[in-house]
Image (cartoon, rainbow, N blue to C red; front, top):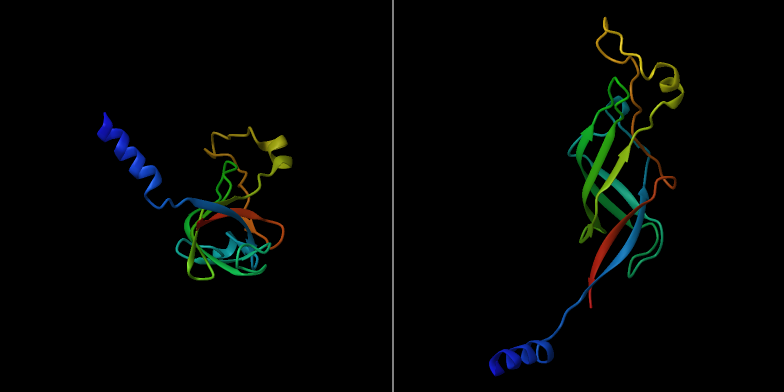
Amino acid sequence: MFKRLFAIFILLFCTQQVFAKEIAVQITPAHVYKTSNNGIKEGDFIEFVTVDDIANFKKGTTVIGLVTEVVENGFGGRVATVYIEQFKLNKNKNLKGIVYQKGNTHPIFFEYFGNVDDSSLGFSPIRGGEAFLRPHKDIFTLYLEVKE
């Protein structure tokens, strides 16, 4: 019993403790990106900028993210979706988090045609919306890990 207490004492008071702190980083796209007309593809790098000053980085610092998945829009109201991961702040700091952006549905059309499933067509004739990433309109939150 004494050995266990002594080991716990040594671990608690005689070793250096390192705590990681996460700082929220808000980013916005640097340019307009869209899934229509072959705009965004898997494997593309998307450029973002920071919205506010954080730690040692000023507002407007470049953040690069990798597009890991693109789901195209389709009939039946299926909207396009973009997943972006593996973010790098200023090319050397990793940011934790995933950004995903979905396209818009077309509620006006769904009100009239949403339940239409023509057996001769075999599908609903309404296509889902494209996904857009717009500067200063779309703001996402990621996390920067800082060791204290």
